[in-house]
Length: 211
Image (tube, rainbow, N blue to C red; front, side):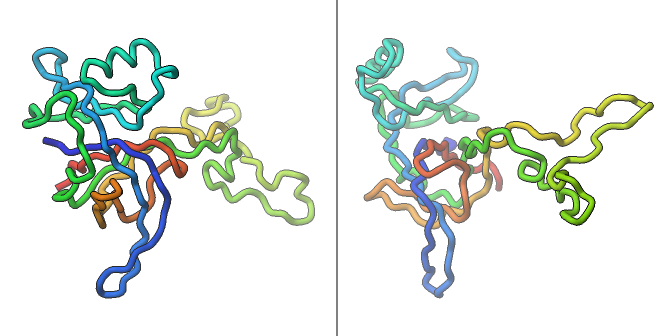
């Protein structure tokens, strides 16, 4: 079974190893997650575990959400995602609760989240353009992109040219993050490095497929 859980980002900190090495880590609140549905090849065309995280008030949930959670005697969830499986998940049933302890034997994980939205941004912020010189003779063009298309041939801007536009608020996957510590008492998972999204943002944490 490919291990995975849902959770939220708590924030970043640093811990010390036994040899005194400082390790920058991101603290993730993982689970507990309820298995809302077990997808099968025969019924759905693929194998997956549908997980739900963070209870939602029934008055704020739709009738469909309440009915779907009621099938497994659970409360409606704010964050619902699926963890794809290559083979049928052995020993996992609908209505079961999965905790962060499933990562006890996992060394690396992939973290999927939504990056921070930065609005409509220029090329300097969005693509890292250098900009023009801020010297005498340059009139209010310091952060402009400059020329972006040929003249007579082909007489239009080519596809893929870097332009201003919406920056951030996109699905981002950070792969192969090392699992530093598993705190089963507080449902916390510490991974080395940064993960996408703001503090409090929802995340999908799954076992990496790298060997």
